[in-house]
Every structure is written in structure tokens, then in C-alpha cells.
Image (cartoon, helix red, strand yellow):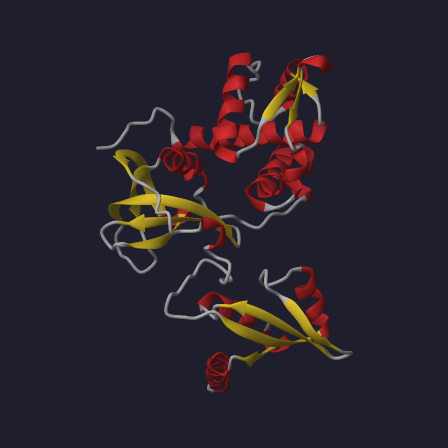
Length: 313
């Protein structure tokens, strides 16, 4: 049995954007009164009806933001009843809160600056954002989700129940990591492959032995292959590309073990899975795998096969 929701997918997505808009506004202003917030709301591209922001709606947004993102918007009664974000310095320490500000907030700012739209070019992001609020609500209350999902290798979508554990962003795509009771294992679902979703009335208990914070510590992307062990990965990178990798590390364990005028050796402790293999191959001959040997041979076999393809044309 599922719980019917009054909000459409579009209104759910808009509500999520309104939360982020409010977080970003208060974060940037440091201290701001409700009257000033309402003035900014009048100018926001999210205010389709050009209405005032009701005080009750504002406080409902505050509560939702605290529950969904663990961000507390407090009121300083001694400073003209102005609002501020408690422990705002934590916003700069990474994680979901930092990501929200760096993604949605910038997008909202650009939407409000219509004259700049043609001068700022974005990478196309797959759909799926409209399901975020529903997923977060289900995770908050530990309710299962009924989803209709079409995997890339399936001809037709399938409908089944899952227990949402956590969500992850990787390379501009949203992923839901959930337990599938039918398959009896944790699986990853791309939000842009979901065709429909609803919250059920079936409660579940989070397993005590799953550490969500460290779940992907030894992985590059979203693949957590239990058949592959964590190993020391050593790559040799030409110094032109090495500067890029130093600025944007491939993994949290990245360490420079040697650097000279021609190349840099980077060391990682990671699972050599399909997605890190694809990342290494994307750098062409600028990156050479040195260890582990089996992974080096796997990369070399792909390169030899590519060479044969181009020779035969």
C-alpha cells in the first residue's frame, strides 16, 4: 500500500529549490530579517506568482531544512529579530551542505539574472532531481519506497520495493543506494532511470553494521564490487596532466610519492573497479598504471584492442 502525495513531481522539485534558495540567502547575508527575506523573495525566479512569503511558510521551511539537511536557521532577537545559520562555518567543510550551496544556489542566482543566461554555459545534467524530496522524506522516517525503474540493460521498466539507505552524487548524476529485499542485497539506482516513485507504509530498520560515511571510502565512483579487494594503485602521470590531478584528486587517498621534471607518481588505496579503469583510460597516454600488475595488464589489453580496431579501419 502506498501513501498518496498531493504534490506533483514539479512542485516537489520547486519546494526543494526553495529550501536551498533560503539556505543560500541567509548564509550569504549572515544576518537578515524576515522582512528582508520577503523582499528578496519578491525578486526570486522561484516566486512564479509574485506573492509575499507567508511567515508561517517561512517557519515551515526552517523546520524542513533542519530535518533534511541538518542546518539550523536561528533567530537573533537582540539584533532586530534577524535570522542566521547556526555554525555557518561548517558549511565550508564539504559534504551535502557545501554541495548544495555550490550547485543549486549558483543555479538559482543565474536564473535570477536572466540577462546572463546566454553567457553562462552548463553541462546538461540528467533528470532525477524531482525525486529527491520524496527520497529524503522516506529516509527520514524509515519508510520503504515503491519505484518503477528501467535499467540500461532492460527492455521494460520493473516496479519493486526498496529500502532507501542514502544518496550520492557522482559526475553530475544522483544515485540512491538502497536495500532490495527481493535480491537480499544493497544496490545502486540512478535517479534518472527512475520512472515513478511513491512512499509506502512499510517501515524498516537501518542496519547497525552499515557505515554510510565510509561506504565509498575505497571506491572511485559508485561501484562497490565485493569481489575486488582494496589495493595500492600506483600511476605514472606526465607533469602537464599531473598538475590537473594534483588540483582535482582522483580519490581521497591520493598521495604524491615521487615527482621530477618529467612525471609524477601518484599512490592510492582503492578498489581497482570498472569506473576507475574508465577514468584512467580517459586520460589517454598521459597516465600509465604501474601497480597492481593485474590491473596494468587489464588496461594494456584494452589499449592493444583499441590499437587493432584503428589498424583495421
